[in-house]
Structures are given as structure tokens and as C-alpha cells.
Image (cartoon, rainbow, N blue to C red; front, side, top):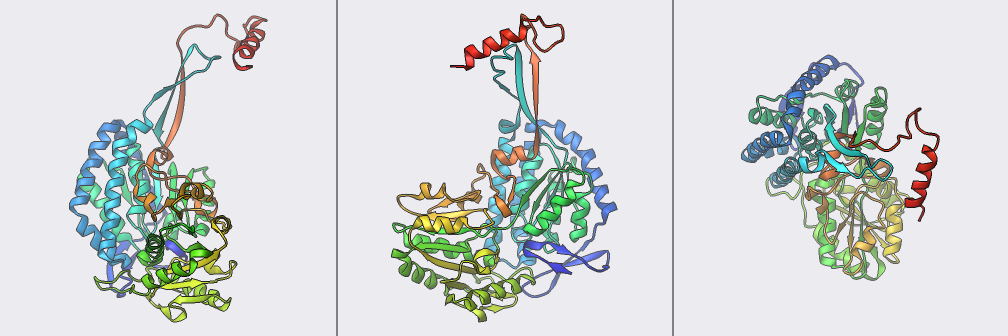
Length: 501
């Protein structure tokens, strides 16, 4: 069995019909779940497709009522769901609750705004087609397959699930094999709130189950995971020309300008790098700080980071590395950085103590080292000195990834943000864009393409349909074999008159 960052798993040998989910803090078995084969996946997709027709016929207001019921039930069961998240990921309870609070807000936004974003609307027909009424609307695809990650096992997939359901689709959800219990409880709560519309179906298993979903004839696939697995998902979907949304890894940078609030920037750097044990696709992995304030900033980051402790107890600031195989990647990145001449300001080689990794702050690391170029996905951060903010931007952009980013500057925050090659940027805060339901979320380059959240996220799960309807007859129709010989010449004179000025 091979594992890659954020939960993709390939199985190289035969296995039983069920698998166990494990508490990474203790190794304790917390659940047992079926491994759905291709036949079972196809059955779930067929069931979802049948239910989707009535779900679409409910219209926006009808679906909103049902999504509101689910939202209220999730809020009522928040503690229970948070407990399952903790058991399967190891993250602290408060972090699990914070994740769910964001989910509730996004679910509300999707239901409340779907009609405004997707309903039929008139557009200008233009001068040549002035006798037409032109409209565009966004119709549901049908059945959307969602393949979710383990690091934020509710918030991340719900960015697709909630928006797809609000747009009128059914959803077949494959959670990570590390967090199947979270997916199971999500689907159970929906069925409890909306028993008459089984449009949210669950499949569990490993990579083969995900591959079966891609090949099942779903109308779109939304995937979150590693770049390598994303490419395999795309290749599989290409066989049926199934459209895909791909949200992959990141190597997000934080730019600290000379006029930044250094205390706030240090807080942001440490939280962005260390929260959730650094297992955050939009977490801060690189910092580029202007030379004139670098010494003080490094001191502040080090002071904050060295106070943090991982653990499985309630008071720990962050939990274990959820996927055991990732520990070796984290260790390799630390070793490579130090072997290349980097300095460990906090922690170092001995900070890796599976399943936990203590905070590691590195400085003066070669820009071509893995700690700078590859996604580490652990509680580590690389702090690099730069001549000015422009050099920091250039180094930040010199990456195959382009997911999120952060800028701290009192006078030039937005100006610098616009220069970052990334899908999202937070100015004088960190990761804040993920908490704004109206903002699109997604990346460029090896971070993927497509968007969840916001109006873009709703449209991502709907197909546009353009319609023209004749309002009155034109004096002549140039698009017929019976047109007068002078018709095209008249049209040319008209377009020169109105568009040639």
C-alpha cells in the first residue's frame, strides 16, 4: 500500500471487504466501513440519479428549505460530528468545532444565494439580433462525484457538496479512507433531515473506489488531494469526457514588507504554519521577510513557535500527523534543508517523533531545497530574508503551485497581493478568504483549477444554457437561402455604422 499527501491511497494487493478507521493519536480502531467495489459504486450513482430529478424539480426555494433543515441539524449535532473528526484526524476539539462553524456558514450561503446566481436572466441580444430575447440560466449537471481529503474532512468536501446540492444536483461522496466515519455521519444527518430525497449518497474505500466513481458515468467530479492523484483522476475522467474540478496542494508564501505590523505577521505565520499540525493546503509554508525587519520578525516567530506543543490531550495546540506516511516526507524536508546549510531557529531533526512533529522554524534554506519547493504538510515553516517585497513576490511566484498567499504591509497590501500568482490572498490576516462564503476558492498551476465557494462555486456545479426567442420578424433575414441579394451588404453597412466608430 502506498500513500501520498492528503490521503490518496493505492492498494497493491488483495484486501478484505471492510476496512478500519484508526485514531492516529493512539492507534485505536474507531470504526469499520465497507469497501465499495465498482458494482456498488454504480448502484449508488444510479440511485442518486433517480432521486436527482425530483430534487431539481423542487426549485431553488424548495431545495433551500431542505438545506436549511440539514444546516440546523448539523448545528444541533455539532459536538457529535466534532468528536468523530477528532477521533479520525487527531486534531484538537476546538479546531474541529471551528471547521464545522465555517461549514454551517457556507451551507447557509449556498442555499440562500443559489437562485440569485443561477436563475434565468435576460442578456442584451446586441444590434444584429435585436429581434431576439436572449436568456441564460444555469442548470444542474445531474450527479456530481465528490472525492474528499482527510485534513479538513468536512469543510473541504462541503465546499463542493453544499454548492452542488444547492444547484440542484445529487452527490455521491467518497471521503478519504482515513476519515470515512466523518463522511458517514454527514450523509446520515442529511438523510435524517431530508428523508424524502436521497440525493446525498456515500461510498467508502480506497483508491480503487475513487477510480470506480470517476468511471461510473457521473456528470462531474470534484476532487481534492495531491497533484499526482489529481492527474490520475483527470486521466480517468477523460475517458468519458467527464468534467472535473481539481483542488490540489500548495506551497503558500507570506510576504512581510518593511512597514508590516510584525507582531500580527508573526502570529499569522505561526498559526498558518502550525495549526492543524501544518496539514493545511492553504497554510503558510514559506515566509519572505524584508531584510530591514528580518531579525526582529524571526525572533518573534521563534518565540511563538517554541511555546507550542503537539499532543493527543485536550490542551495540546495541535495534534498528530494524521497520515503516517507523511512523517517521512516531513523528516526528509527538514534534513534536506539543514544539510543544505539552513538553520533551525526552533526544533530540528529531533522534532519528528511519530505520530507527532514538534514545531520547526527554518531560516537561510536554499531556494531549491524540498522544504521550499515541495508541499511539506507538517508544522514547519521556512523564513527567508529578501532585499524588498518585490523580491519576495518573485520568489513566492517561482513555484509550480499557486493556491493561496498572505501579505503583511500597512501601505501596499493590495498592490502586492495582486502580484502574487495564486487563487486567493489574505492581506494583514491569514487564511481569512476561506471563511468568506462569497469568495471563490481554488488555485492555478499544480494547485489545480476550478472554483468552490461563492457564485463561481455555484456555477461550477451547473451547466449554462443560452436561449434565444424571436420577438418580432426582421425586415429581412440574412440567415436563410431566400434572403435578398442586398441583405448581407445591408448588414455590413449597419455594423460599420454602429461598430466602426
